[in-house]
Length: 361
Ligand code: SAH
Ligand code: SF4
Image: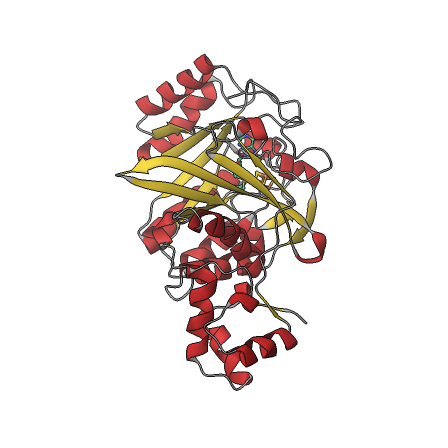
């Protein structure tokens, strides 16, 4: 069976090498080449002896990064979506967003998928509507980051931030998600800062409680979408009947345990959850918490839901601001290439520039 080197923690790689009779320090040479020099495959790791390279090949160790099936870039070149072929041909999407400089330093954020498809069925989300195919492994998550890390390194840059906001529900693939985070943040591997990682979840309470115990300094974003249980259940059919209260309690516990603030996400949908009454109820819920709310005006998908007008978005924000909520409107990147939140799906013909609705940004 193939051993995916990108799915191993540095300590695990050491153990595997020891089993083959190789010295432990060989692990660091391999990790250095894969993560710091973004080698294309183990065969390119020339710092280890040729005999060890052949042995690893014979034992089916693999760290080959596949060429993307398709790359689509937005007109401004800041957003790039890669269609990647994973183990057994599963297709998933990964997005790179390059922001202007942050005190002179560019911010390069990769948005990873954790599942092919998603079982949560949120009614406004393209991934949710395509259904669930399978969980990705930790190595498959790491590979997505490494795909763009290699592209960036060739231009003298690095991946600086990571968001788990691609296809799938990260906390429904809990073990692979947490393991990928541990690999990517390990100083001996990619060494990303934990504080530069955000996991976005539809709100699986038990998993949030578990994540709080992991001793990770990662950010957590909870997709709320409604201030009340009834409306939330219409939008997130898999939500528990009393999910709003439970989520707020889980968020508080996460904050107490990790010292990190939880933020909330809200896909704003015309005529569904963008009216004054809903905004007021949301303000009453989140205002006392001084919560951070990220409003994402709906990105077009195949469904019948529509993005609210600018005025409606502005009104929503005004009400929340007045209630003491730290409300930001997410500036969506990549809408015209269907690379924005909720637009990722790999169905036939959907992943193309032509399939996206023009003029929606
Ligand atoms: N499954 C996780 C993470 C992936 S979705 C989650 O649901 O949080 C990332 C974000 O995109 C979520 O907040 C989700 O609600 C939002 N989203 C999904 N479809 C969207 C759409 N069509 N327009 C805007 N945001 C959307
Ligand atoms: Fe899954 Fe998130 Fe889409 Fe809901 S919004 S269907 S949880 S990917």
